[in-house]
Amino acid sequence: MSDWPCGISTGCFYQTPILEALPRVRDGGFTLIEVCSFPAHLDYHDRGRVDAAAGLMRELGIEANSMHAPFAEHIDISSGDYGQRENSVRELCLASEAAAALGCRYLVLHPGPEVEGKPSPEEWYWRMRHAADSLNRVATRCRELGMILLLENMLPHLLFGHASDMLWLLGAIRETNVGTCLDTGHASLSGDLPTVVHKLSGHLRMLHANDNRGNWDDHLPPGEGHIDWLSLICQLLKWRFQGPLILELAGHGTPDEIMERARRAREFLSELARRAEVECGA
Image (cartoon, rainbow, N blue to C red):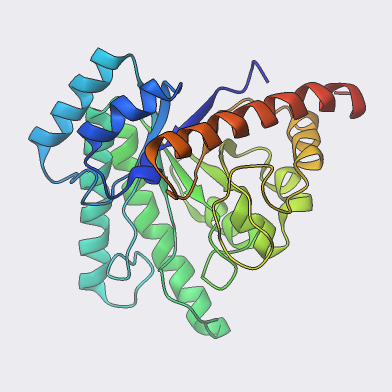
């Protein structure tokens, strides 16, 4: 586990301005974070606020591993509407510039629209082509800024909710500074979790670690849901995963309660990793 830094997404405080949330995170025992881009938390359009957050992070000794790019129904890089695609790419490039100002190594992005429904084979294909072309442009901007773009697997009722979609996209993007972020909760709900590390192993750079009980995307702390974490950690060890684990938790309870649950989750994963090294022969 010592090779897997464990951090936390500030998304658990998404309704709290980031300048108020950062001291809570540090006082809660975490110095590695993923920055949430929800407007009430951090408006990435406001460079003054971004710079203030970067300064406070330096003061507190907090490192920004990544920033989660914005996602909303109006941000759709796979849209058949040229104007919507252009506006979506523009927003994601602005977010990448904010991430670079915060010192992030990664920009994590939902590659598909936040719209339910399974497209026809024809629509699936043109949406995939549009997404790949748009992602290539965002990846180019990330490369210019010294960052890596990570595609996150989405929920199964959305486009790009399965590992096969992710692999198609990775093959279609020309830029090489592109990898994947595995959301354990999403993969569990899609049924991909038993094999997804093997399928994405050459591209996997980090995890969004969260749990659920099999019905909803609950974002529970690892160990509080139904995911078989020992099996997953054995997969990570087998395929020599070397990235960080970022706890992506729901913001239920007081700040102290949220951070206490995060600390318990970190210890749970640490204990399982030590056990896995023995039981899995890693």
